[in-house]
Image (cartoon, rainbow, N blue to C red; front, side, top):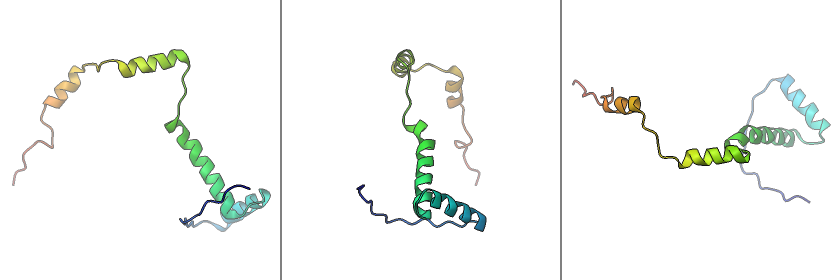
Length: 96
């Protein structure tokens, strides 16, 4: 039997009657409570949306190119250097 996780947080939702009926029907079809259905579905969707921000895979050639880019010394960008030498709006003295 799967281990139960203690749930201590609460999330309240406002939704239309039609949306609630749809969720209830889907939960019934899955033989779950509405809470279980919504939580499982929302977490699965959240994991899918976050997956590309946590893990990415590369073939050997692309991995080598990625590592080489990380290991390479930084390139000089003359226009960026010039921009940093110019005074910014934040450097201006306030006139009070």
